[in-house]
Length: 382
Image (cartoon, rainbow, N blue to C red; front, top):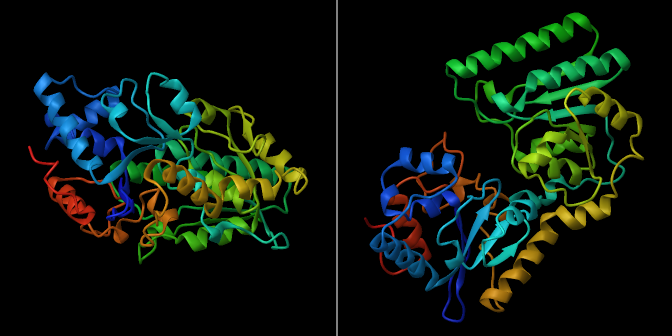
């Protein structure tokens, strides 16, 4: 992810946010080697550099900082032995991730992209909620959609009149592994329908529709606002934004306790019902039984997670670094920019239909990014 949150001007510096992916691209050894970068990511440590290579990286970072306050966003990943991060102006990282790397110096902003939920997810109190249980996730191995269907089947055994929906919102790339996942999911749905032939269950698949465009944020928000309980069946996530979107939309939220081990920060205490593996059906059923009294306080949730509030906190934090007078870029909207899933709004990227993020993938994109930022000199050269 590479973002310009505020352009530099004659009166103040701009604000630039990169992720660990772009930071690794500053290493000479990593230039042009996506495989090498991947290996470093998996190791959690950048390569060791010689004295001259270290000087080169520091020079590149210094070039960025001449006109910009430079931050690094760690939505889910914080390297165990980060080099050069003390030379960056600030970090966006969850408290749990940041505390695990206490050797990092510098200024932390304790919110990440998941804490900027756009207004479309905010729900009026009197909104009619006709869906008892909702799941929204791509059909990926760690998302365990087959487990969601199994839980749905158990809910129907306890409440035959329940209304349950499962949505896979994003376009798929079909390959051998994906075909196997589709078979597993279809088998789970078939078993549910055989066991409960009159169940009000729908698997909504815009990801494999003829148009193949997936489901918009507005459509997902609409489903969340109609739902009482949201269940995330994934057992391995970093900081899933959908949990916070569901909370702001007014849902009771159930997720696996294991997610806490992956660095998920709970902004509002007791707002998410975390259950151990094997107790997911009981957790969902309890959330349904306790609806709506079991929900967290909605005004407290909105204060902590709604974009309109988080943006003001971020702006106040950045003004302590860059001075008064900052103005965030209006395009793309900050709510879409921070998760880095709005590449069509990034003028320095070549937009492609299958592109999912605004990460910088090659030297050409780096150079266009720097040109847009109006930075003199080429910090991406070999």
